[in-house]
Image (tube, rainbow, N blue to C red; front, side, top):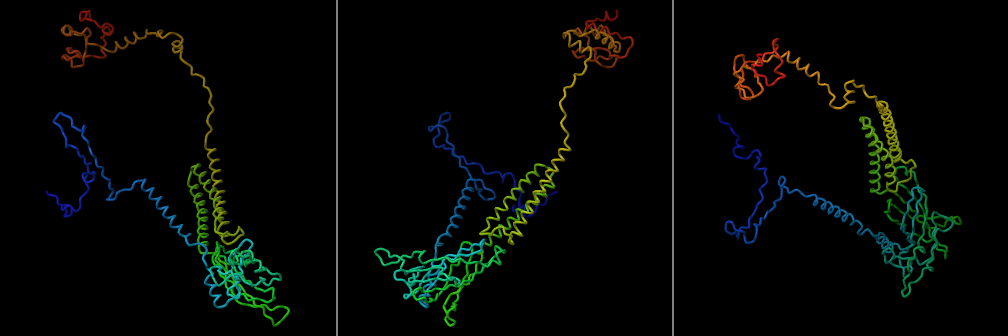
Length: 495
């Protein structure tokens, strides 16, 4: 009967792997046999040199990477990542964000400009501090030799003295006097001394949405007026621009022209400038705050998992480990909360109500539960564990009189008198068939040998001779003399 093979198997397209296909190729060994002597003689260059070429081992056609190469590759990737991230610092220096704005003001509407160079937001106060720089654009308003501020060649320090009033205060918030600015020796330039043409203004924030961190927003409205102390005339302020990006907030500001009616005249209108500012968190800060918020909740949920695992486990040591993990989690959660970018204090804001306080509550309950489980199992272990019996020295067991005499006397004081009685008893129960005189002559051994066999048949004995007869047991006429006299003869047996 022939076996039918499939087409693929017969053509060799599909075949099972054999041992020959799996065995790695042998190493090539090349022998340097250029100079070989006669048989029995040594080579001229000494012993034969064997050159072995090692081959790489392949795994499914891929060369496996060694551990050292993998470690160095990981280090190289890490260095490459750090270098790529560090490129973000290139070009991040202070950009001339007000240059185009100042050039446009100098060209179309020259006058006094107040620039908010810095905005410091303090959520805990809550307050905001703005650092203003008093500038002027246009040749009629700029002090000679002070041009070039903020990258604009048409703007500089004002050439007139000014009093700045913020939010219609009675006393001026800042007093600027150009005559106090020094000259640089050898040149006609006037250095820009910051404290001589800059001032700070403090404002109170509207905190109606402060509880929505990190989605909290703040609003500020203010009005500023400039007065020339020499003429006591109000000088119009053209713009009030501020910076946009700070370390923790994004500032959006807009300013509009306004006027103030003094109390001494109902028809006089003193020009002023109103500022409307909005403050909110940048997208990056919101993202990191929400990620940390989620991490804290994951840590709190892990303590619930520890309680479930401890409930299913009967090992006290495991319960103790879960308790230690939960305590560590309870200590880590506040630290993660403090790492949130520019987060307010623990004042009961929304992210703490649904986050920090709830997380600490869940973690604390889990820790207390694990403590109770550990205490209960320890007490149950003490109840089920039997106390170890105390060691008491037992009295020695009583010994027999014979053993006592044996221990008291010498080792040769054993009584062998009962052995003869034992032999008599055994001899009375076993009957031995006497040997025949023929067998006695044929047997060269001084001791008779009796083998089992059929009566009247010669059977070979252990020493090569043949004996007649068969041992008969339980015969009443048997004698035990042969047991005590090994050299007994047939005539003596008959006698």
